[in-house]
Image 1 (cartoon, rainbow, N blue to C red):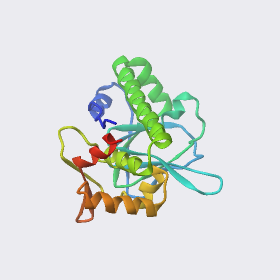
Image 2 (spheres, rainbow, N blue to C red; image 1 turned 30 degrees about the vertical axis):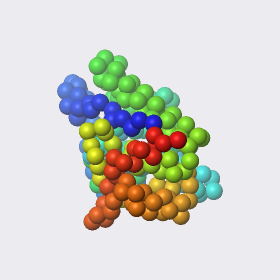
Image 3 (spheres, one colour; image 1 turned 90 degrees about the horizontal axis):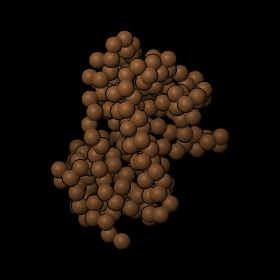
Image 4 (cartoon, one colour; image 1 turned 60 degrees about the vertical axis):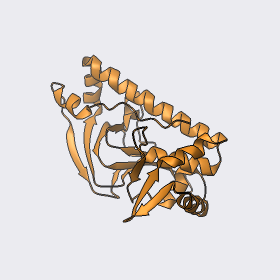
Length: 219
């Protein structure tokens, strides 16, 4: 399974150039809640800097990580489709810089600026494709391959790189929730990956090496 980077879009410049686009700049420290599951869904957020965890919590209190978002991504767009309440929680995993665009303004921007509308729809479609790939991965691949794919996605692996670093805030408990396995299994596979030279730990940071791609390509 190929790991590809999406084409980069300069959303900051696009948002700044749209006449009358009133956006609210926000700063969140690591581990702060941006919104909680069940909060009013009244705005779309754009992540300018940092990492954000999107998670859902069952009635029994069990949490599952749906996605880890990086700079250049939108979230909370469910309000545009009539969602009255947030169906997931968003938490800053690192220090984050955000833009909050209230629903009426976002709707106006999409209606009045065709280029913005086209790029935004393309962005959402690209993310949905990634979520479909995640679901297929959960259904058909082993937990070892699922972990390898999660690591490569978190590291934004591209063909031009031989290694990429993941921020140290991605711990094994987070990885276990994303992969759908236990922390002990994640620890077992991470030790195996390190012995094979696929990952490395240095200064508290996790580095993913290009060799990990071979695990996904091997049947």
